[in-house]
Length: 187
Image (cartoon, rainbow, N blue to C red; front, top):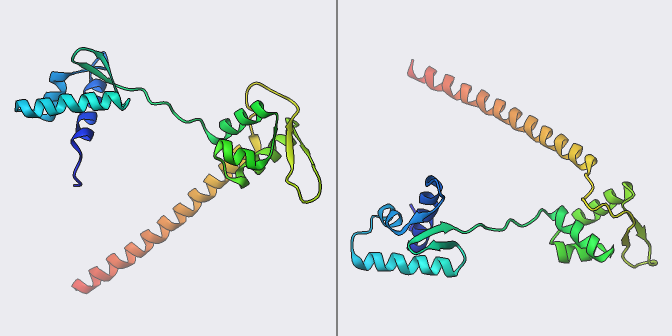
């Protein structure tokens, strides 16, 4: 097992104890028990680590001697980030979405073409050799649902599942042959 830092052990102790407590909080004595702290020096180290974790935003101090895990913000999906950029700027290029929404160029252009089909954006051609610009023409506050992509991904998952089942059947067949060969070797 890899060496785990003391800070990580303290964070895990806070998280585990808070998860099992009805108020979702962990006291210093709970954390100390979980870490099996026995000396004053270890206890002081734990308190310093709790302070460091609080300053880093990993835990919050509810009251004196009581801590809880900090709620972490979840980064929105790429589509949601692209939608926010499009609504904010009104006119975007694929490069804008790549830079601001951290999407791949292929995914951003595919997403814009889908919105174009749904008549949410229209492509403005600035000229030969220049990248296309998409303009928002129908601002629905909520991001439009892409049924084509959903169907495409369902089909892709189905294909992957069929391939995995075929691979599993082939592996089972080979295991059967190996088992038979071992059985015949014993005779």
